[in-house]
Amino acid sequence: MTHSLNPEQFEVLLKQLSPDRDLAGAKYEQLRRRLVTILTYRGCTHPEEVADETMDRVARRLAEVAPGSEIGDSTRFVFGVAWNVAREWIRRQRTVPLPDGWDAADPVEPEMPGLESDAGQGCLKRCLGCLPPQDKDIVLTYYEEEGLAKIRHRAMVARQLKISSNALRLKIHRITLRLRECVFHCVDTARPGEIGLH
Amino acid sequence: MDVKRQLETRLRQYVLGELDDERRVEIEERLITDPDLFELLGPTEDELIEDYLENVLTSKEKAAFEQHFLTNEDRRWHLGFVRLMKEKVVQRPSDDAVTDPVAEGSSQLAGRSESGDESWARLARGGLFVGHGQIWAGALAASLVMLLAGSVWFVVRERGLSNELGRLQAEHQLEQRERRDLQMRLERLSGQAQALQTELDSERRLPETVKATGARALIPEALLPRLQEPPLFVLATGLLRSGGSMARVAIPVNAPLIRLRLELPGNEYMLYRAVIYDAEAQELWAQSQLTAQAGDGGATVTVTVASTLLPRGDYQLVVSGFDRGTQPERVGAYTVRVTTP
Image 1 (spheres, chains in turn green, purple):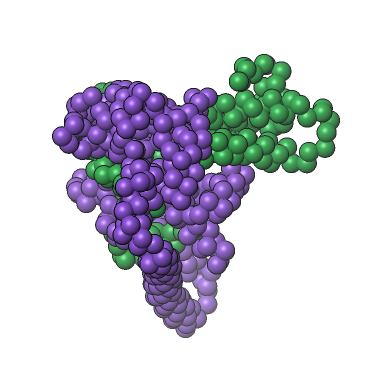
Image 2 (cartoon, rainbow over the protein chains, first blue to last red):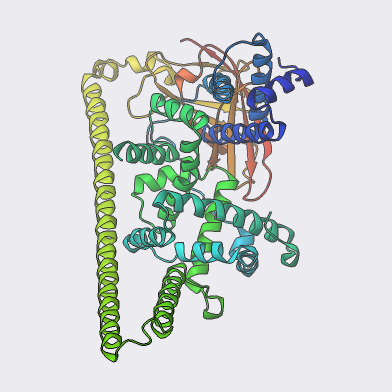
């Protein structure tokens, strides 16, 4: 049975992540996001809750470590402890993959009513308008080609921007995440006039 | 470079659920502790989404993508979003056209070149050579023209070479990727061939006497090890039909898999989800996107689970029904006691 985290234990966790409270908060969120991602890949139906529980357990474990103990890179140490705790959850699941062909579930054709409609396009147009012009240019140019031409085209865009192909991939991913959130919010509230990038 | 490519391939396999347990755990540990690798996961997912939308995944990759990646609403939403982006680019009207960063880069270069010309012209006009003969001015002008012509030639040639290099690099990348895909496909096919061979061998070894001597009649249907299909147990809500009031399942020792047919009170939903809990209410296993089959005795949902998942003990199965975009509703619960035969 788990019991709730006390403020002292939480403080120990934050201090281990960074003496700067804001930076510690950012690292906490980073770690939590990674846990949610892994848990989602593990088929966890409520990854946010399990990630929170994992973070609580990490904090309790850290509080048990004697103060002043030499632990080297503290961020790495915390992330390592988090991984050990998450692994315990993963082991408990004992998921055994099924052989191919056994009772395969019907694939679900993705269907997002809000996006399929004109509202989706309208929201995208508005959200693109909220991007800095250069980001808008880059993202629209990036998606211009398909297939073989796509690889050459993107290599050319990266060269023109004087960044590596990987850096371009990351840049596009970050821009599309922001855009996606904006479009989601816009379609969800159906008030495109009030949206903006956050 | 090779290590980087290997990691990218590994990430792609991770997203598709193609890694064995050891490699999966290994990559998950790195995803937690290595920020650079975690950063690459998002773009890898994006690229697989694009490949899926462009229909360039193999049928197996496509199935893996649907069954392993498109398992939650957030990811399906992201797929819809990327599709929307691609449609937007195709429909991009001229008034919405934006400055091409490539063209912009070129115009900036052109701008710099013009200002350079201006400064040279200013210098030439600025009276540096006032007082000298016309001959010097002519010679200087000729030199400048030659210098400019030479520079232009070098710039054009460099750009041509750079484009050629880029094209070759892209082609090389493409070839590498195709080779990698072929290698992966080959490995998968040889794995499948090996599995089929093993299955064939064990089928050959199956003692014919079981059927010939009528021994089958002595063995309950659920206990008979079958190579073609795992043993089937039919469960009604709250009890096992074949076991009377005792909800018991005796898993044959040599059955790696069992099938559980769960009877439903009706068939009112498009999709179903089954979850198995242990005695401490810990979720052990779950499968979504199940569809009901109609039969004489009503609708049922059948799931196949690994026998190792269910050692001796008590379990509860819960089935929920849902339509797309709605919250799941519980439609049945089945209590099971797993025993040894």
